[in-house]
Amino acid sequence: MKSWEELQKYYEKELLSDLKELESIRKKTILHIAGFTLFMLVTGFLVAMLLGGMSFFMGECTFTFCCLPILPMAWIIVYFLGFSRLNSKYRKDYKAQVMPKIVKYLDEGLVYDFNRKISREEFKRSGIFVSRLDAYTGEDYVCGKLGKTQIEFSEIHAQEKHETTDSRGHRRTHYATVFKGIFFIADFNKSFKQQTIVLPDTAEKLFGNMIGGFLQSKNIMRPPLVKMEDPEFEKHFVVYGKDQIEARYLLSTSLMQRITEFKKKTGKNIYLSFVDDKLMVAIPYKKDQFEPKLFSSIVDFSQIQEFYGVLRLVTGIVEDLNLNTRIWSKR
Image (cartoon, helix red, strand yellow):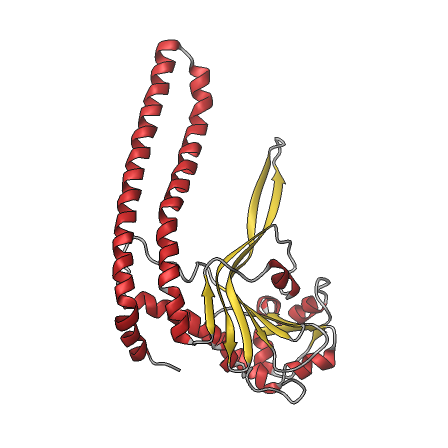
């Protein structure tokens, strides 16, 4: 594994010139956004004054009051559309020039594409999340081979639509996040036939072993509960599988220890699925992990360190879970 000192040298040799060029684009983008903001403020003020004048001189108060609630909403929509458009080119330029180099530095066998994502079908096939996927977006896709193991991952934001009706009959729609974070897929080093799912053990943490275990066993949305023999693993995870024997074959003592250590390393509630000879891992994050800074300088090694650290953590699943060690039944 390459050291931070080696990354610093690579940053100075290969990335610094690109970052300086992108820094000038970033500054121009901020100027354009500032100009657009000023234009929108002046326009909004003039429209408000015009409507106020119309209501004063013409007595058209009804028209004015109808427009008043709409104007701020329209202003916000137009402003954020304009902001997004101005910021879009800068983001694309950064991700086209800098991110592929960071990924290649991590491993020559990896390829980066900021427009692609793990497919909705693969995400659903994992069986990790049982909610509807009414909205599904993603970016920052990486694929390739690490040793003997084919991998792919990307950022994903999956949402479920909810509609509510208040006492007056007004219908409201909002989207609840099902998952936001990095979704990782790798060839698994054992062959198997049935699906096994490993989820964070929230029930036992909330209600204790007896009640939590009872609730886990009654989860009708999942395959049957599988009890494992590793107490430390059981403290953090709950396992569901269609084949009890195969689930224990997949989750060997050493793999359970490795998964527990990886969970501690990330500091997050990780989700795993073994399906179709693949291992799928969902690592939740509250924010996008590979977004360049807009309102502060990007000629900054710390941001490259941050991006590289996340990439190293995710690709490190191969080593952390010992996926390159091929079992005799799978070469």
